[in-house]
Length: 237
Ligand code: PXP
Image (cartoon, rainbow, N blue to C red; front, side, top):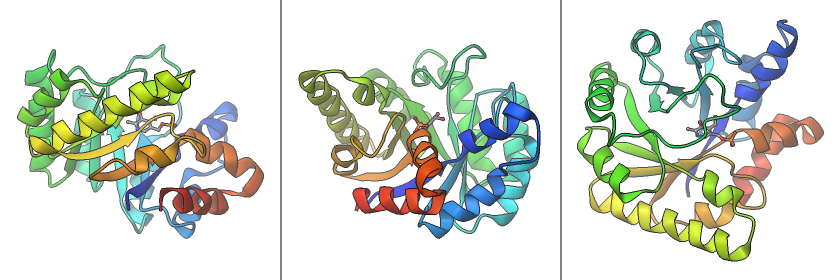
């Protein structure tokens, strides 16, 4: 069964809307773990629009499962990661204007920088993953980067508007996972997954971990976070 990483960025988004102290992502992590979260995922963005440095530091000290830090290939956040040492880091592309991470990282285009970042994080004892589209060119570059994991971007699958398009995008994920595994990579996935579309992705051969944020935090408004995580775990299993 794929593990569930619960992304709690949007708990911090609500807090930052008023620049206050609540809701606290550290409390959210505890509630998610009570619901069975296998990992707590956060993105320390360069503009600090949601998760703050203080959140990351406290989460690394208090989370019982493990913290997965999403970060750009940028020296200041890489430095923070190497000092704070979350269990895992996922390298992601980052644009200041975007609402959320829009596409996968261009590993093939920025190979030297990505390989250097993966080496630096791996050298600090952190497990490294790279967030990429299910594109053979990017998968092959990721396999040469030294990172043991990729996280396949499921956004195109999640945003597909017809059954035919959904099938096509799912097929790309299945093929991408098979190619990655044949090159020795381990495979995670995430972005845009929700209570309606998660099952086919959880069923992909060799899928190790799904990182899900917006859908779980949105559901939590009505059910509470612990129950929202429990429901998602039930679907994945
Ligand atoms: N994985 C990565 C690498 C992401 O950047 C995000 C969004 O922060 C997610 C997973 C979770 O996406 P969503 O909030 O759409 O579930």
